Image (cartoon, rainbow, N blue to C red):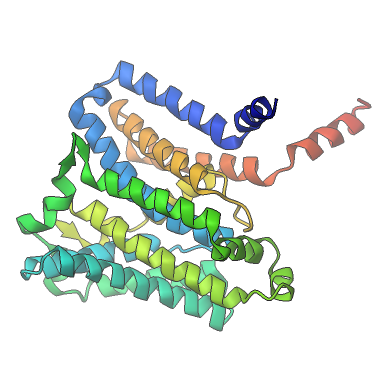
Length: 325
């Protein structure tokens, strides 16, 4: 009986419904386009990889009630510096830590501004994104690294039993973070701070420290995501990921994370990442222009926010009361 009840609870979850819908879209695309080719599936897996890793970082921030609108430009800077060092002869044990360090530094700056100066996360990260845009023009080589060396693209082109290595790395990171969020006290602090800031203080939790650590962890994930994204390219451009934070926000919100904090899960974020990458592929295969894609992305975010934030049970009760039901 308990097992049946457990299965019933799983079926009722948002993640289950989103997963079923995503599978449905997958099979439609698989059966009606060339998406199902080996190259098509590998390309899809590469897209999912960097979206998933960066969206995990965004989810951690959302849980605390914060965000990072500079995540896209930070991703671009991390990838650029990694490629720049690789072009200079550095190998993976140098350029990967460089990318992570860049992510940690810029994400950490966001965290310091938010917790120390009490600036709203949206304002702080938007300002930092503008600073990044100014930095792009000052970078060596004009912010471009062309003809990156072969040892830089090894990670991006490597396969593990036909599966892109970048996807394997992303899944491994997801599973590790899933365990981290389930069994550590820090994860509970994230939810406590996002759920009720003042109550968290009364419980002996330091909201400032928790939020700052969330930004630093997010920075690590941004650095890794920049490697997963840029090692699949022959040319790395610092400003190429400008605006990509909207992709990560979409995957996070679609997955069920609340913009008000205190709610969100990595399973939902993972499904949201698969879903977003799938819709992007669908737009390409069915010939939609970019502006349709942007409009559709905005609609998805709006619907996801409404589904997450609105208490539909309360709305239903009010409607029944209003109409005498």
